[in-house]
Image (cartoon, rainbow, N blue to C red; front, side, top):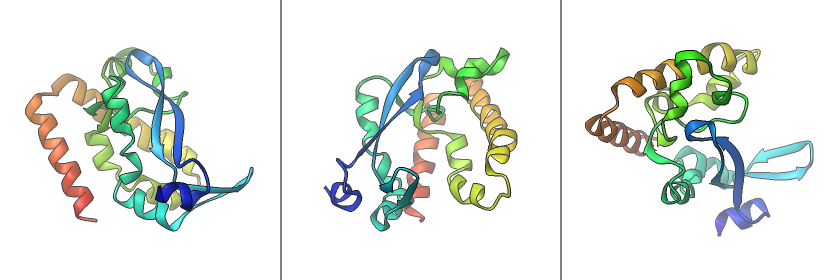
Length: 162
């Protein structure tokens, strides 16, 4: 309800992402941006709070219920990244995307990190994304139930430490 009033929209943000086996699916989030004009948008004050505590991602539980996502696994990415992986790196898309991962924990402040870069797109494509691929590939080979529990605990602890 707050997202509806705060953003003056329906409150839900829907975006196409790449899921398991490279299949596209629609991910759900609470809208945190108020779009004033086609070329201008700002994160609302409530949106900043929702993002800080990852509450904007609560609707992704619907994606989990639908079987499109799991609690732990590589975060689903936009088309043009995971769907273009080749060779051994392509194994990542065999995994169901998750609400959290080791890469998501490492880059929990990715937005701020990118904002500090002179060329954020270059930094993402040449530094962050390749590192996420390696972290997710390591998860592919070594994931376990106990490991997933540890990631969930670390994710909750990270949210509560903010």
